[in-house]
Length: 374
Ligand SMILES: Cc1ncc(COP(=O)(O)O)c(C=O)c1O
Image (cartoon, rainbow, N blue to C red; front, top):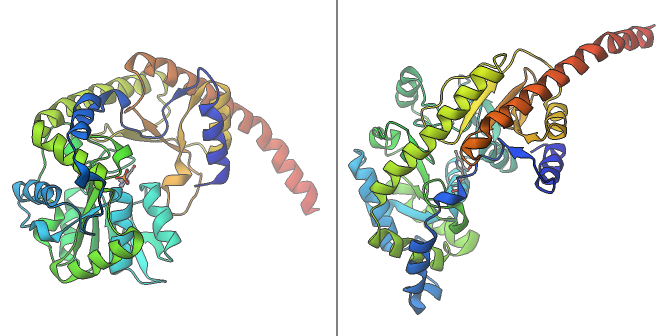
């Protein structure tokens, strides 16, 4: 992440009254506090003990069974419980990427993946470039909330390369459809990533990685080397929670909860910020909105903050890190519905001020350039 963005976003947390369309966090009011507290209360001493690197059997079985319901032949033994999806991505890239190798990533991509791949020495290339490794979010992408087009999905399956399939938002498609993952069609070359962060709560840091059979040992070894195992207490609490609650019922409720929030943001954008284009999200937590304007999106963020609203600038989501044309990730997940129109109104005023300031400074910038050329 651009350090200026980090600084501005930290600053905004300390400013009272700032409305946030940033972050893409799950809504804290959906966290099942009392059920998790009950599960914690009934966890015995073993919840505080070391455990195996692959994670607790009950959780691995839960993940495998859900994937089997979606048509993937997954055995609990192929599931590795990780410290969130982020660590699952890291282990996947360690197992199937080499230093200096290229990875195809979407044009608008989850920044945590971009940062991770770069940190691990993997080169980011466009979705259409030739490469032996691809990162994809086929069902619900962050930031767009959209699925991969059918043709692109078919092309990925026809390509012989390795795939990292990030299904972090799979259970949060608003229409509840959960078609087979890519894993179901190409189990020998898909590293499949999932998480409880979006459907329960990210604080427990529990996710999973399904690896091809031949990589099972190396995956467990990698997990052991990194941190021995995922947090036993968090796994045990989840296990207790899942044994006593109806998770599918929760998902049905969550989907309509987030769909209503998405509708609200869509209406506000159409009414108050018509100069931005976007496609209505089909799931997830956010909208990817693009404009035809140029300029520095960090400057736009600073202007937005002065107007009392915060957003995620598009550069963080682009493999190139480019700011232009201006794009924003706008999250509907954690803002109160009653504040959405106010937040978008503030953003519209900020964007207007940003464009106006840029137009005013442009002629003088051109003049300065001419003078220095002479
Ligand atoms: C697409 C995607 N993958 C992975 C992650 C990481 O999730 P976790 O909290 O489980 O590490 C996120 C978090 O925002 C995400 O959006």
